[in-house]
Amino acid sequence: AFTGADRAQPGLFRAAHGGTLFLDEIGELPAALQPKLLRALQEGEVRAVGATRTERVDVRVIAATNRDLRADVASGAFRRDLYARLSLWELDVPAVRERAADILMWIERFHRAFCAERGRAGAAALRFEPDAVEALLLAPWPDNLRGLDRLVHRLAHDAQDGLPVSRARLLDAVPGLAADLAGDDGAPGAAAPDAAEPAKRPAPTSAEELLAVIAEQGGSIRGAARWYGRHHKQVYRWLDAFGVDRERLT
Image 1 (tube, rainbow, N blue to C red):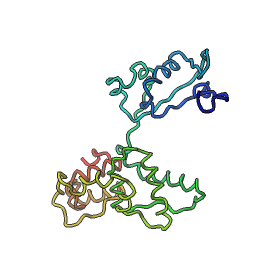
Image 2 (cartoon, rainbow, N blue to C red):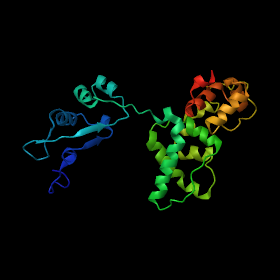
Image 3 (cartoon, rainbow, N blue to C red):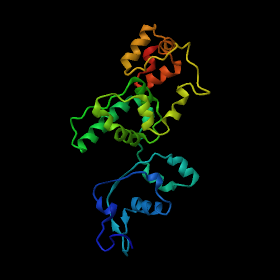
Image 4 (cartoon, rainbow, N blue to C red):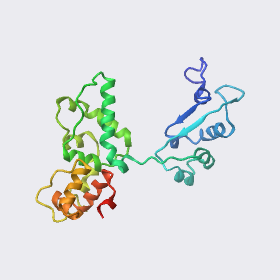
């Protein structure tokens, strides 16, 4: 028995018959349900709760997970035969931290959607101070796009006054971010700047700006690092975040 058992329930597979079924977070599927999903994929049959016979279904299944299913198969947490059925075609979507150049675009998109849902289509866009942009690009974002969406919800009211979001406000809005960035702020064990200037200059906000500084320093990454008052590894992080091919600089 289950809530709504007194009414006809088609179930996900029967509802998706002839179409596509998207199964999110497939890596969290309990072990007891994995053989049932395998049967549906392998035999093209499902049986409704309380039914005595199976029904044929024709469904294209797309599954997503942020887990390493190969490791889960090796440990026995995920069925090998089910993984084989689901992995006929695999698409590896890079984590947000690996495509940092897209972060501001996603924030803008989430903010537009947030405002549209609340009848505030003309609201001012979210803007960030340069040091806040640097923090956005360096953050690990373990929750990927969900983390960016939550950030937009927390910061949305800040856009109403037209003022850019400060680094301090950003760190307050993202739990644990200050600790994640500590290594870049001079925490114990962090690399020292390359002959850093007394004060850091603001982080670049675009690839063009960063490349212009590198050019002014004769094409030297270390020269750009000294100009910004950062370690040269930070300059490489910025280049990667902006999607700049390092071979362009050689």
